[in-house]
Image (cartoon, rainbow, N blue to C red; front, side, top):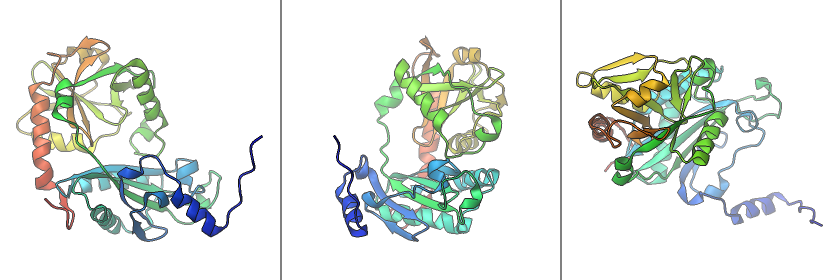
Length: 321
């Protein structure tokens, strides 16, 4: 028969928290919580109030941002998208957007690493366990800087294998908001692992390509034209947007509805995301795409992005290399 859990005092509970290891704590560099107004480097004190509607309702939005060479990449594009997402669920941050931008830079600087990722969570805030947003008197804001290691070149050379996910694309309204409920995305990745693939691709109700779990899919047709899926059921990625800007005038591009048949007919299939930048999808449902390896367009776009990070990235004081 199990024993009843002990009832602890405040001091005993804090001591217990500090003495209890947590998975992944070695990767936490620094974090900020607006309710406290402080930055901390102790991962065991990185806690989310359970009555924050962000925790028990998924009522919030988020962005994941990369920094390398001591520079935060496409920071303002991420903040623009977060602002649109927050507006879509009638949420305002507990500080100005300019202040939020500065807090992101401050948190990265406090982490002390020139390379990392930043997770920005903007929630409805604590105040109750119901569904009514009015329970929360003030929005919550959490900013976490954590370790990020770039994949080796062998990973890019090998490419990724994709499949058609059984998880449908999100409804258009929710798909265009980077909201904190990523259950469909998580189920897509679980399905990928179970089926032995790397990349799930979901489709909208018309059978057209929407997106992958946490990345955008772009095709290169046999004429060398970049083809971006046109769909109301996908989120436009900041990395993809920046890559298309960099390629303008060099690689032709068009946006149109793309079906499953277009994937296997493509000369290249590209996956854009904050982590990988641009990586080749070399197979789809056990069929080889193109030459079955990274193509020239993928290699060129990744090189453009890599060269752009130290040029356009927002510098973090004390971390610029």
